[in-house]
Image (cartoon, rainbow, N blue to C red; front, side, top):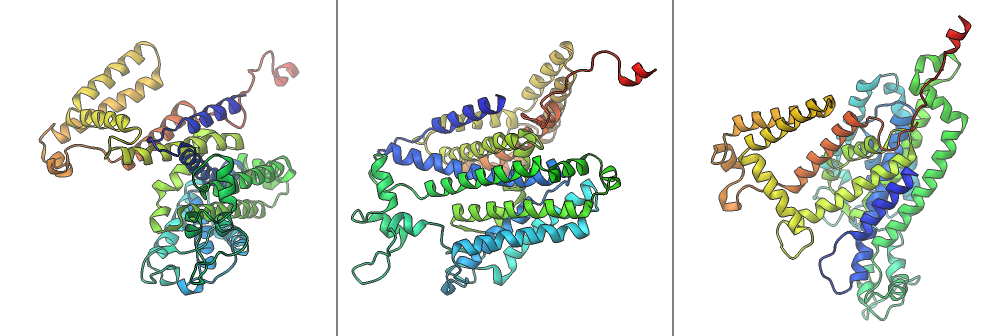
Length: 467
């Protein structure tokens, strides 16, 4: 019931998301919700993969973006036309090939790394993601697009894009050239799936392509949920839990630990590779920056920690929270520069709070210390410790910065650029970090833990009865 209540609340928030006053409200609302749902599908699939590796098997994986990048890069390179330095594959075989390569990479990773424990395995996995990011930054064979010298991958087709806007048969211009999906969407005489859906929903233009990606993501989520739920209920799922709880005991009972870990990494790698392909279709073209840990790995970990480890329902809630956060901060970035955009007032309020904390840090320090004292009086030791450290941090900040007019403030925030204003991207990273820290401190099992609660033991234990 907690899951359904949280899911309903978050879905209502998605429907409430504000729009700047546009004429075709239905079209832009559909585009907005589809965008959020496509982002949600990407992070949920990545969270499913991480939950299989870390929540069920106990492998501390900080390299989920490694498998996602395999899917994004391979799908982009294999499906891009040959004139743009790609291979011209159809989309479905390219996706299957990317998932197979992701699974093989997971299986091969188990050999040299799965015997490592906790933090050592985490270091190896996060390094694998950084290796791929650096290769994407410098390897000429990983440059696909209109300009071979540019960094990144682009000009690859998207699934059902041509059919969505142009119909089953290719549309030709007056000069006999094949029309692109963009050109088809601008031609009102063309009857296509997008125009039919747009008419049914009362739009003045064809339905957006993002709706297709949202539907693809939805079916991928359902299929992955069914497969993983079946695996978790199977004997293999019970073996994974045994390995997570005590690897030596599981091995003592005759289980091949390495083989089960390799299988877990392979299945999770295939899921993450498909999520990477979906991410590439959503972006339409990408550079190495999309693999940065702050934009990928730690967001997935935030969904994993906030939702609740080893519980697919928890992954749904955590991924939905992260998708909403991504959307809100993208809107806030735009709202900072225009009073006509939604959430402009919220952006201004964030500016005011940020200026208060940076220019007069001793005032928030006093507030936090007073709250810490109140928590001590209420015997809330954990909250008192948190507010105490926050107050101490602001005191150190006040000593280092020295208030308004300090050289460090004027260098970072020159008056010619408008003075002290936060960059919303950094605010988002701070908020994600705080969510992870507070979740681990105050609710370590997440919103929906694997075991919701354990009843307290009453009466004598079996040992006491025997005695």
